[in-house]
Structure formats: structure tokens, C-alpha cells
Image 1 (cartoon, helix red, strand yellow):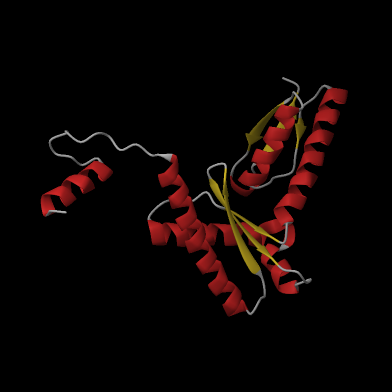
Image 2 (tube, rainbow, N blue to C red):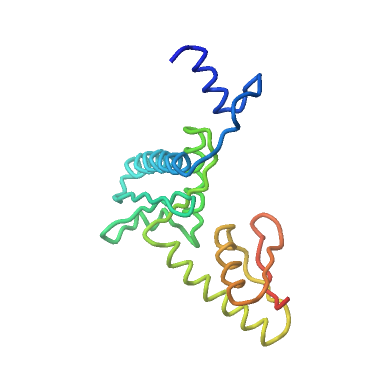
Length: 187
């Protein structure tokens, strides 16, 4: 490939064509899938190194679905080390997920929406959040008044919002920072 062809290809990729003759870049599913796979590989390398440094045993599984990369760290045996990576109410898990996203950003220059799970904590928590949503809807239905829930992470709020909507009620996030919470109402 000539230097001119390389520059044209680069211009087409970045949208920096000075003559505006190159077609606008179109993201296709193959490009997105390969970017998500790369994201998973970078995240897995980062987490593998972390586990080695902390001397914690765990297997890392990578899955790409619904436009996101899902990383799971699992172990066959009970591991206090992995449990410590979840922390109280998933606080350490949330922080580790953000650090992993930063690692991906640093390596790929792309923001990541990857989801990290450790020993099925998020799946178990999703069931608990579904129950919280159901209870809030029942209370709002019974009392006719809005019900405010405890503060939770953005990921957890999304699960509750979806569950409340599936039950035919309305929910809104209120508050700022660590105090951001959901209010459930009938209208």
C-alpha cells in the first residue's frame, strides 16, 4: 500500500479527509464485536495480573453480549480472597470494575462499559434487586404514595428501573453522588 493510500485509509477511518471525498465511517457489527473482544482481552490481562499479585486463585471468563463485555472471575472452591474482592455490598467490586475500565481506556483509548462479576455476586444481587422492586411497587400500590429506596450504584438502579417498568409502575432516580436513589410511584 502506498503512502498516499495509507493516508487516505487513515483519513477515511478517522473522518479527517481534507477533500471530504471519503465516505463517512460506518461502524459495523464485526468492528464492534472485535473491539469488545479486544476490551475483554485487555481487561482479563489486567485482572489476571491483579489476581497473581494478590495471590488469589480464580478463573476469568469473557463473554460479549448485548453490546457489552462481561467479565467473570470464578473459582470452584470457597475463596476468601475472591470474597474480599466483592467487599461489603459490592463496594470493592464496583471499584475494581472502574479500575478495569480505566485499564481498558488506557490500553485502547476507548471508554468501556464492561461489567465485572465475581463468583456470581451480580446475578445473586439482581435477584435481590428484583425483590426490592416488587416490594416497592406493592407498597406504592397499597399506600398510593411514592416509595424511596436506599441509595445504590448506577448498574443496580438500572436493574430496579427495568423491574419497576415491567411491573407497570414509574421510577425516577433522585439525589446526587453516593446518595442517588430511586423513587417508585404509580404515575
